[in-house]
Length: 232
Image (cartoon, rainbow, N blue to C red; front, top):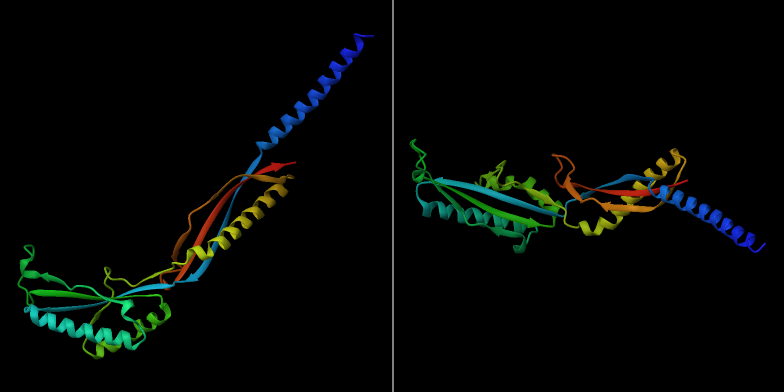
């Protein structure tokens, strides 16, 4: 009798241990079941900063004469900008760039004008809509005899969106919710349910023009990648 009781206790312990091991193995196997999903969030925002280079060029053979003309052009441009609501802090005048065609050893042809001088007045402002209206009105400078150069690849008007930190939390939350929705659908289709998050990573934010015709409207995009455990 004394030997039967210990033997029975050992047997019960083995059975309990077996159930525990089986449960543990099952749970361990479940931990290997996971699904990785991505959540996308896109948002269109208006640019809040514009850089507008106003380019003029003068040609001639006498630098002092060209300089006088450039100074007169700059005064007219500054007057045009300020009379339309821009301030000194939003306007900068770059030093003129001089190209001497006679000094170019690769230029063997006869030239009519020795000097070509490029002058750039740069507007940098957060008044995007106001500056866009001024760009449309720059023909007023033509009436004053100031030929504004358009289409120069080196001097493109650019638009930026600089307030990303304000919309980041909202966009990350939306991307995460979209990822969760996709994971729920996958779990439902596979007759499982979602467990805890295994890993999560936030992709980089990207800001691009909505299209080539509206560079003042930006598309902000972020993608999150989340891996969930699957449970029965």
